[in-house]
Length: 177
Image (cartoon, rainbow, N blue to C red; front, side, top):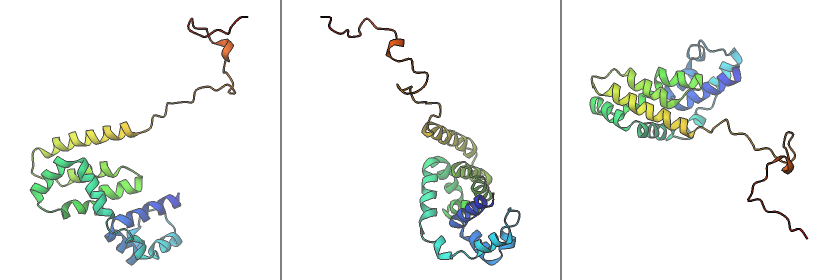
């Protein structure tokens, strides 16, 4: 559906200013391979660039949250590369763009990006695998349980009513008399 593609491309433009500039300058090339017609491409190219910069700290906050989930892996990457800009390049990476277009997880895309750096640090693959597993487990725990159903109410069909329930020896009995 093209409205979903438009939404995802706009989100990519919010995070990746280089991609946004490419869309503004040459929409046909920047948006090649996407199921958009000429009118939709033109609409994306005519977005007000100022609207994409309303939140100048968006990338920094997102990167901070991602780094907080992978603290040791990020420390190993920074130890070898020595610059934070190597982490910021995530927003221009293929894993990021693929996740945005597939409505995937930024967290998993970030771990894929760190793997794609092919660093010499021998501990990084194992540390990254452990931290990624912890992040996936955290997300599973935060996901609402979909198997919970409402208990039957007196007005719902199939409710046996109080007479259909077995009496307990501790059930209060009315006074006789």
